[in-house]
Image (cartoon, rainbow, N blue to C red; front, side):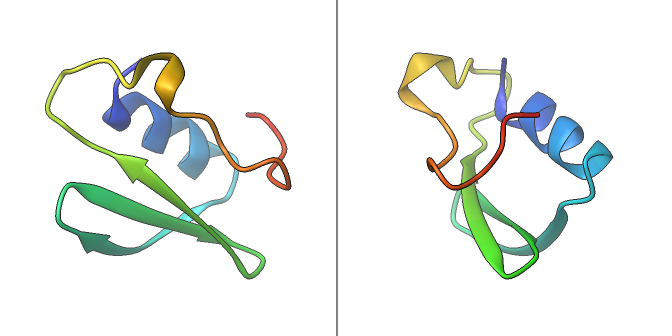
Length: 57
């Protein structure tokens, strides 16, 4: 799953794009911010996972 796919799923769950810092899109919901790496169509792979306090989408 690439960064664009992750962002689409987060947006569907009510997350909003707060800002972009380089290649990282910062998504926020309820005071929680989660960075999502966006590197074109490159797979985010198992390296990226949401922080433990964020429920899976």
